[in-house]
Image (cartoon, rainbow, N blue to C red; front, side, top):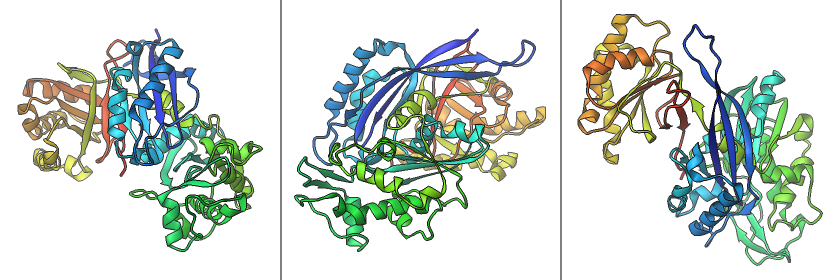
Length: 473
C-alpha cells in the first residue's frame, strides 16, 4: 500500500521569497518474495505561494520578521497545518545567503519547518534542486542527451549539467538580474560588489548610485555577464569572464559540447517573454534576459525553457530535496529526526585496511574537536558481497573507532553506499550499547552534512537529505 508524506519548500532568494507544499508518494516496488524496495513514486505540488520580494532591512541584513510573516500568511492560505509536514527544505540562496543574519532568519522560520526540514544554502545543492525543479534531469534522461541548466536569479546563476539523466557537474556564477537596482526614473539605487569588482578590474566602466541610465548604459555589463554564461557552456573561447564571476569556493569546467541549454529562475521568464518596460522589476533582469536571447553563441544550441522558471528552486526544495535510504536498514533507540550530522568519510584504502580502520576513524574525529565533537555520521563505501567474517571485522573496527562518540552520549550513525547496512548494524549491536543507526544506499563525502527523518513505509526506509554546504561564505 502506498504511503504519502507532505513536504514543504521555502526559498529565500536574492530577489524573491516563495513557498510550496508537495505530496510525496512512497511505494514498495519489490515483489512479495523479496526484500522491500521503497521508492518515491510520485511528487505532486499541492500549493504554490505568490512570489514575494525578499524583505531586507538594508543591503546586508534580511528582515527576518518580514520573512516570517510571509511564510506564516502562506501557511494560512495553503490550508495545511505545520504539524502535517514531514520533510522538506528551507533554502537561503544567492546573495541572500551571504547576508549577515541568515541564521536569524532560519531561527525565525523554525516553528514552521515541521520536525524534519533542512536549512541549507550551498551552491551545489541549489544547482541540483533548481535543475530538478526545472525538469532538466528528466529531459536529459528521456531524450538521451546532455542538458546544462542555468538557474538565473537575482544575485547568482546556479549551473547543473546532466548527462542522460545523471548529474555531471555543478557550479555557481555571480550573474543575476539584481546586481543593479533602479528606481522608476532609471536612477541606480544599488550596485552589487560584484559589479564594483568588475569595474575595478577594468572589465566594465564604473556604475554608481544616483546615476541616470538608459538600457545602453548597461551594454558592457550585460556583455560581461552573458559572456561568462557562454564560457561556462563552452560556447565561447577563454575563461577570463568565467573566472571573474565564479562564486568564491566553487569550480566549473566547461563541457566540450552541450546540445541543450535549459533556463530557469526569474531571468528565464525575461528570456522568453520580455516585459514591455525594461524598468518593470526595478533591476536589469529584463535586459539580461534580452542579452541572453540575442546571444549568437546561445543561438547555436537548443534553448529549453524550464518546466519551472522562477519557482524552479522552491519546487525542487519541496519535491526533490528528500530521497529514501535503502530498505535494509538497522536502527535502535534513535530519537528522530537527526539534523546536520557532518560526514566523516573514509578513503577506499582506509576502509580496506581492516586492522587500521578504527585508528583512521579516531584520527578523523579530530577534525570536529573545534565544534565540540557532536554527533557524526561515518561514511563507508561497503562491498557488494562481503563475507560474514568481513562484516564482523568491519563492525568491530567501526565500534572501536566511534567509542568516543558513544561515551559522550551520541548515537553511532553509519551511512553505507552498498547494500549491507542491516547486516553491519546487527553485527555492531552486540558490541556496543546505546543508540545505533546503519542505513544504506546513501552516497556521501567529506564536507557533506546529512539529515535523517523518522522511519516511513512501515519502518522500512528513512527519509534522507544530503547537503553539501550549510552556508557558503
